[in-house]
Length: 325
Length: 288
Figure: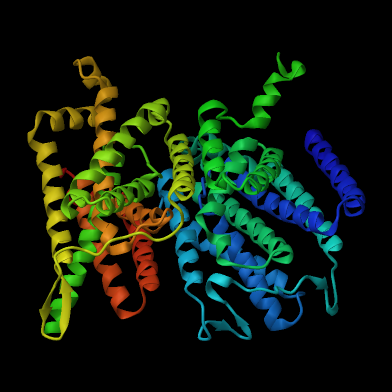
């Protein structure tokens, strides 16, 4: 309890520093990039929560990420105001996660099959959204635009005031606050009875079930929470980059897993650190013209699995002198 | 009537494609419980092996049937030695490592061979049924699928190697105690599985064209098929291919290819909700 509050306070301080310093230090382009990093960190955090603490390996966390972004874009264009687009864009991925989770957990599908099914769902959505070019694919006044996505996604505005849209610097601040809130929600969830049962299920599913806990329901709840968080990440992402089918693509789906794994499975800060590190590495690899970023990512993933299977943060943690005993 | 015949032929070749694409994965997963996420990229390498050898003047049958399995089999043997062998029994880690392999293969191939679509036209030409044309190659795929599954079945059922492989699959410790080296059996199985994937890549290359990212188009379908099939790898893959391939082709006919895929996935998910252990988890349990 005490440690949790300490961690949350530390996260708040770090966020306050980022909010106060970065918008003054960084140029506009770098600031928008930083917002992208933060939104992807929320996505990584969502997977870190359900995989690291619920033991649910979701290979298609991007399903909810992409759905959040698309719902937000379509709703914002139709309403002309983002006040109600945001709750809608949070509800759709949550419901999707609940429906998918119902089929998987109540069907008692094992881990590995679950990974494959979630991956397939995001790939199918990728194929589907890619094929929605042309005039017959519109929702209200928003054209889905197929491969090109929806350029010109409206940025957030003050609730109830469509004319006051947020500046990039303000969106950065909103994103950082969202990240800290998500972190706090995840931390506090793990303190509750629900969170403790979820961790117990990760440790030993059969034992938890024999002790009388409804495994299916707890997994479903955690999965829906993860879907909600990923949807939020999608909204933030849609605010700094436009919405396109690549949100559902295999490369994003793969990257999320890599971030969590590199940072450290079973921690909440790990996925965020892994996300920022790997994003920076990918950006750097992208500037090397003769090297394909996929190759770099793939090699990193193989090396991490073979050499540091527990991830960077836990491995570093065991190296610290005061953790040695 | 002509139309009905053509549709039936299409469905048959759809099922055959699904079976061919899934077989290599089914062998590796069924025998070793290793989920090879680089399966799609093995297909892709097979496709490139076929296209490149054809472009360098090899006979079309040699470049479809002979070169891809050999090339990808060798790749598979190397991958097993360097990657898979270190991770036996760690299913999730194997999945992640093969995913890494998949990404790096896509990256490496797009760097060396470029992102453009390569391909060659299917041999054998076509025949006419009334107003419709149908390629002989579709029939050839059906024949190839039948031959491949029969061959795999016969190998597992009647040969000494098949017996050893099945024994190791059922009880690794016991096989080891009886003097069979599980490592060698696994290495051979993985190589054979990779060679089958390579052959599949060669077979579908004339139909689909070859790009570095072509694996992703097939991997989802192949996985769903194998998983829906369940524990008995050959019977399961066969029945699942027939069912899902049928749904896929019919839905494609009625609407668009994308909806064909969506229908395939939906049927598979609902099926897994009803039969969580796959088709052969409930029916035909004792089959191979």
